[in-house]
Image (cartoon, rainbow, N blue to C red; front, side):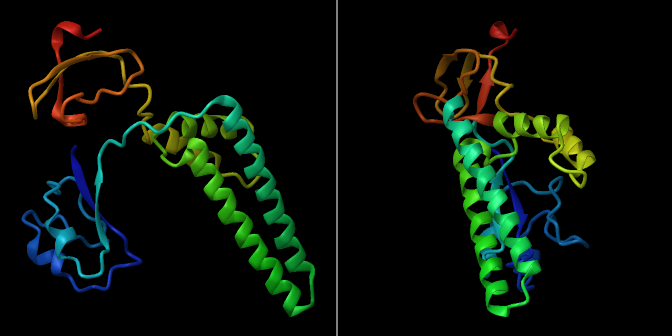
Length: 210
């Protein structure tokens, strides 16, 4: 699987050891964002970083675990109720002149948001590349939840982030790691049955392309 380095600026302590070990200079940028075009995925910067601010992440994420429509609907409904509770708690905090109640309502609002986020992840919306995430964005674009909804940004995300569940056309593959040849059905993720290699480690055989 092809990897690249990303830096979490909140964790970065400016020790800058990554600058000394990176063989291509990808970590040395003016905005502190690691240059993806220069990064070779060697992992030397991540291993050297004393604060754990650099992680190696895949270019192409695997397909997310499937959820049935009934499960997704139930989770979305529960997440919406948590979002409504968050708004109500924030309104109560804003309208209260009692410091104790204001602090309590803000804590409840934060708790409701965290639960809603966990529900969305559990419902299959953790990865922006997933079909669930794309379908949700399309729904929000078609029917914005409020006047302040960032419609242009949502459209831009939909354009920039490709859905990784629409690219599995099926066919025959050869693994470059163990040289096993195998077939997949349309919609099925291509993973070597012998060594579990995937992504760039697999070659789609020409005779089976659509």
